Image (cartoon, rainbow, N blue to C red):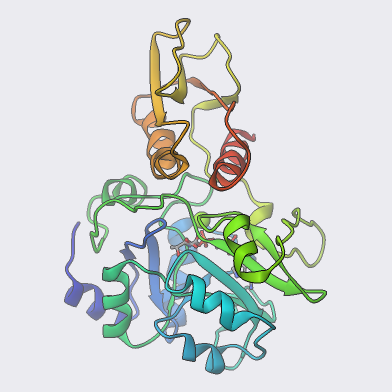
Amino acid sequence: MHINLDEAADKISQGEVVAVPTETVYGLAASLHHPEGIKKIFTLKGRPSTNPLIVHLTDPKQLAVYAKEIPLQTDLLINAFWPGPLTLVLPANIELIPNIVRAGLSTAAFRIPSHPLTLKLLNKVKVPLAMPSANRSGRPSATCRRHVEEDFGLDFPVFDGGNCTHGVESTIIFYTDAQWKIVRLGATTPEMLQKVLGYRPEVVAKKTGENPICPGQLFRHYAPLAKLILGIDSSADVIIGFVERAYPEFEKVLHLGSLYAPEQAAENLYRLLRHLDQEKIQAACVDIDFPKEGLWQTIHERLMRAAQG
Ligand code: TXA
Ligand code: MG
């Protein structure tokens, strides 16, 4: 159910949860000052309490308040990418960021989104928003109001901002051993980060055990109910492929977009994965013969995760 800016701000200020558009994917937002609202986010999503949330800010100056340490080159990254799809994991001021948001870690993840409506809402609420993606845990993220309503019901309050333009989540980086490293690939590519940092940040693999670097990477993610097969497999009911290619062995082709436009493929990705379930498709295969650099690397990683399990 669409709600307007004032209604969204009121609900959040009263400790309620609303869905909010961002340039990457829709988020489920609660005020950082309302731990009971934040708790509702975990319940609604079915999210493990060990998976922390991103704190969404309006002004980079807030980092001095909510973070305990600001690593080298943070200012360069902020100037280049904020507002926008880059999330920084920093040592947190644990007095101001509730334990539940951090899942008990000593760090917190921060970003300033660039969607004009998210910024308007943040400015109106005047408190940072804890906000994970607006999907039930494990499902593909939501990139429009209809996706949010699929997962949370038609009555769920959604501040509708149209379709998300990036279509994949923010890139998450953290600073360790005197280097920034990528813990989640996303809409900001390693190549874009390299231009600012002067080196290409390493993508660190998930680490199980006591202190995972990015807890979310441990869980199954982005998965449709349909079986997803990577690579061309004629036993599948449909193929997800590219407009430049023909797939004569398939009756039904779903187009991710053009091989020359990774931005378009990223924007369409979760919509197509959700479409498989809307159409009750049992098994789909994906043409993954595309470059593995830039945004394609993120698309490939999401498809691999979606195909697991
Ligand atoms: O684009 C995005 O980032 C979207 C929009 C709504 O902002 N948000 C999003 O949130 O993708 P979520 O909760 O779906 O993914 C956040 C990821 C999780 O994998 C979580 O484990 C990780 O961020 N994370 C949060 N705090 C962390 C921390 N302190 N250290 C390491 N990883 C953290
Ligand atoms: Mg998510």
